[in-house]
Image (tube, rainbow over all chains, first blue to last red):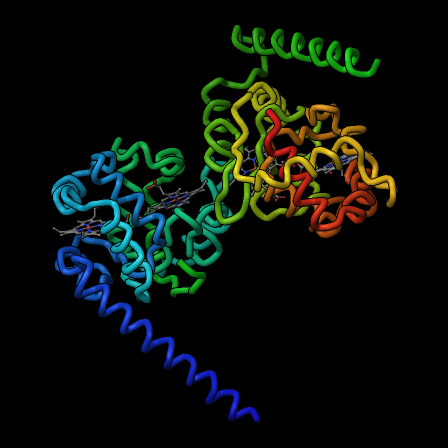
Length: 209
Length: 216
């Protein structure tokens, strides 16, 4: 009885995996210019060099960021140099297709932060620091850094990328990304280190796209 | 008869508030709150509650504070501190606020008047209006308007519901017994709402929440 149920589950898991593979392969190679993205973002979109992981990111968030690159609203130097060109000739339908595709890939945690800072980072993430007006990230990004709707998944993004993002709002870039410029303003350098370290270790929790 | 009186009262309240704001702007009073400190805290609250305090949908809904009754806000902030009302996020936020800061923040939030955030199912609004104004006599459900006011603007410790996020309202009413009035030794205004939260069916709740969320 136990055994049969387990087999059944493995069976349906396999079917789902096959379906995903077929769907992935078809949309990846035929219709969508995935290769135009993965040569920077890594062949399985897990992130590479300066380019962040796209795998498992929320569909609505990816779509909005692509639009903000196109509108030159996300304007930090790396975005200007790499992403403005990459989206210049992307039509909305293709952008949406790419967003759906990348969000469907299972993400891996970069785990490249300082593990000694992870506990401090988690405390700030969960509770904020009320005396210093640091907001609890959990209120918007969720208990496992999974995000919701168009609020991005943060869990497992690379330490280097997260640190840079949190610093750039204070340098005056991408002020339209509300409410993050305001949130980032109250973060000290140490808090940024701790948050980016913690988040880089957070494992994938599947909550849909 | 009741309506004009309510209006006079709220005009008087507004007048007092305006005088209060004037005095604050002049500053220099001993023990006055430094403006910079106030602005930083006010901005901090609005990272979560929305730029104009119209509410925000994060991983869970964060309520509208704009236009809310100062006495209600004060009582809720105290309730978070005293754990009469439990919420992990707001407990930490509230316990560091000085009385002067609470005073200034509640006035500032009361004076904001942005458009409702919206997002509720429109087809429920008419049914919700009926419940709000008439209740459900068959089960002794009183009209919400009898306490929250005909325009859902609230009064004193009774909260404004106009423009509140519908999903926030649904969650609060559904979890009332687990979140509000948690200190048996210190009963509070939450006990007034409690029996009503038990009487509302899920359909009635969804409808009335949709209705008030559209009110300006």
